[in-house]
Image 1 (cartoon, one colour):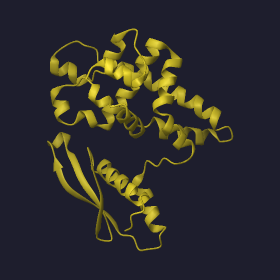
Image 2 (image 1 turned 45 degrees about the horizontal axis):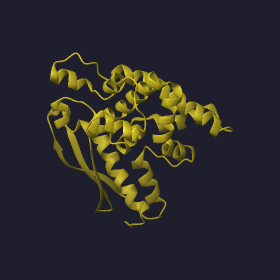
Image 3 (image 1 turned 90 degrees about the vertical axis):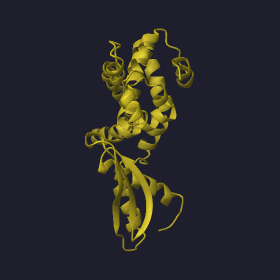
Length: 232
């Protein structure tokens, strides 16, 4: 993958390509290559600030009759790691990130944390290269659906609680458990694979870098199954 392909996806051509190169460089790349190439962490810091500002202004204008607390909670749903990682996958960001071999082999291109940080770095790079309006256009283009869903109350980050509420609402006894199928990787960098069971029947499976993340992943898949109308 090359940067020109990425520019086509995001529909913006950088005037200063160094900004984009930095935005797409994970810190592991420098360690692995033993180079002084600047990574995306400073751009991530900048992008995080402007992402908050862009989303805040959008919510301020679109949610006129709600409290500050509601605005804050809604914004948190949009700028959280999970939402940013999902948006990053839509533009295939992981394929374009420069990273070290070890991180790459450990599945770094699909890690929510790396993808979310990368999105913030891209926003920071866009601001530096094209200004506030350019960064805003990117955010509204690629996080627009997330913003709409958050405003409409359709985003749920606690998938485990939502699954339980849906099942309990059906008026049947619910006995939910999350079963660890296996663990992979060294002790300091494990990946957990789990599946959800309800009343003895297996449903969604998932994985994550912690048991909690893996359980939420399995619950998310189960939720998709329930919304397709499949029964337990």
